[in-house]
Length: 136
Ligand code: SF4
Ligand code: SF4
Image 1: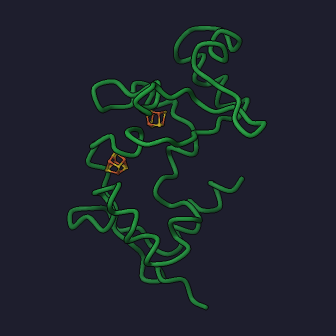
Image 2: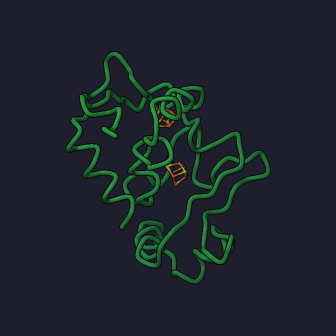
C-alpha cells in the first residue's frame, strides 16, 4: 500500500511548546545525546544523568516535571534547542504518526504545526529521510 504522504506534507513549528509538555511522555536519550547536552550545559555526563534523567523501560529518558513538562522546557521554549535529542528533532515525522492519515490528523490535536498553511512543504523523500534518521 502506498504511503498517504506520497505527495508530501506541510509542517511548521509555531513554538507552542505542546509536544514538550502537558501529558506524560518519554524522550529517550542515547549516550551521544547525553554527552552533547551535558557539554551544552557545561556539566559532566554524570551530573547530567543525575539531575535531568530517569530510567524508563530499561532506557534513559529525560525527566519530566510533576505537570509533565519536559525538564528543559522554559517559558514554552526548549532551553537546549540546539542540543535537543534526535527524538525531538525528528518530530512529527515519527513512524507512529505517519502510519496513517488518521494518526497524522489525530496528532493535530497536540501539534498545530501539522498541515500548517504557512508551513514548509516536506516531500515524500524528505519525510522518508527523517523517518530513516529517527530509526537509527
Ligand atoms: S506541538 Fe508542534 S507546533 Fe507546538 S512546539 Fe511542538 S512541534 Fe512545534
Ligand atoms: S528536550 Fe527540548 S524539544 Fe525535547 S521535549 Fe524537552 S523541551 Fe522539548
